[in-house]
Image (cartoon, rainbow, N blue to C red; front, side, top):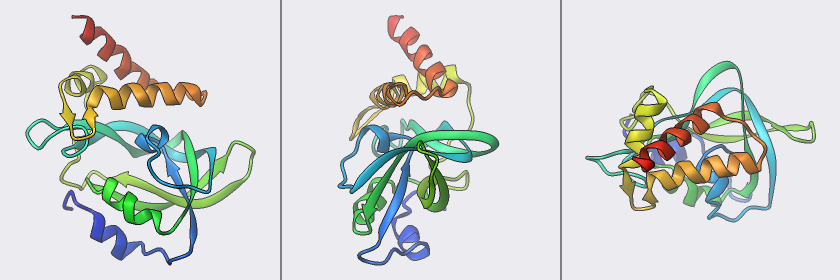
Length: 189
């Protein structure tokens, strides 16, 4: 699958004008909310783990030196926490461009902190996209993140902002926090 997924998302998952849709954010959508929304609520989805396995050739890296950003991988017993945003359909014109580097929209069941649930959309970069980097040790991921930078800034900034946001939400994500620890050690060297 090509890295640019704008047209595929619009073709496979059209959203009618005027619809209001829940969107689940688990990465940069948590800390870089540059889109209008009607409501936001802490939420989680089951069966998925957050991993820094997606390459960023546009926002947090370059073609020659890709950064790493999060995607979700299937993990039957996992629960991934984040933020759900209620948005108008028109917001996806902007979000499809922002999330174009290998991310596809999927429908998911979201569980809200108050015990209610609803269906919504989530962007996931699957292993069959050109930008997918796959599994690596947290130490190796940290090294790659430390030396990557793209049009949206240093890749380290992405990791640090995500870790800070997860702590503010009261979420414990060992993968993210282990990478953060390695980055802090590398910066001391």
